[in-house]
Image 1: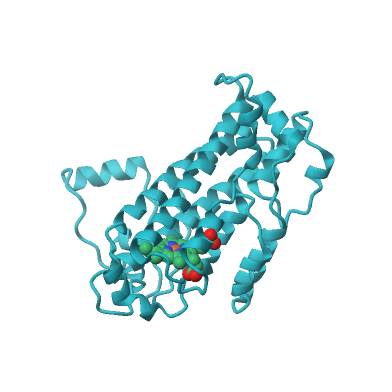
Image 2: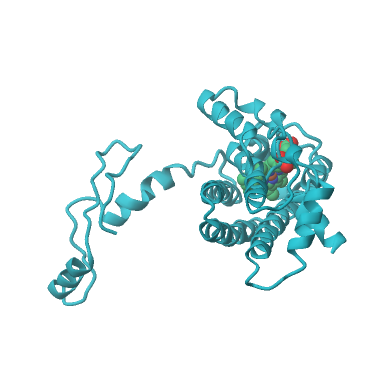
Length: 303
Ligand code: HEM
């Protein structure tokens, strides 16, 4: 890495630019320290400047002394970071598809599948949470609920799960609200894939390409049939089949995350109403049943 931007920082101390160092610089430094790591720094280490550990730690602010709460808070924060990373990957995949760069889009989508697996694995740090432990800090959460996660809504919108109602809670943060409204109206990753397939000469109906992007796309017989045709040749050289499988991986692991959320709720609070005001389990089960990339799943039936 040869160029670096100065570090932005919300902390009081002035951000120091990270010094760029190339391979020959690293060799010279290793010779100077006889191969040992550098241990002398006048200010915060370059690692601290890059990662911002103090800022991260300052964000771990439990609202009770209950020993179970830090896990709940940190896992939630970690999941928010995975949502951000997923959003970046899928927005990049959209740009690559618009440039007809399928390899670039596939690289981003494949990376995202690994991120999704890590997101899903994060449930492991909460699966021990008993109802009594959750009750130990739940009241103090007030009306706070993951339902109010705007980064999760970006993830859903990119996957084509659109709803105006989930944008409304964010009117109090105008920039976040405007960003979500834009994402609601913009094409999802699924829309960009269909537009890409149309440019490749596949018979995507005009009404699908010109549809209102702010509503969820349901499985369409013509789109299902064209994926069915793509899937008749399941060899690695069939790049559209490879794209279909990468998107199926995304849909599968995302669905797994949602199902494990339902299980975490069932395990830690049963069928009690949620802090966000919903009926809880029953509401979540309905929400988790919504299908991501419906044509790709329906195609399995027509092959
Ligand atoms: C065991 C711990 C958890 C419980 C008991 C739980 C409970 C719930 C409940 C009851 C809802 C429905 C809305 C409501 O009325 O509150 C909900 C929604 C949601 N929660 Fe959790 N949650 C847990 C952990 C998490 C974590 C760690 C995240 C990560 C950010 C998260 C993200 C979400 C999201 C995104 C929704 C909205 C889902 C949708 O719209 O389909 N939850 N949660």
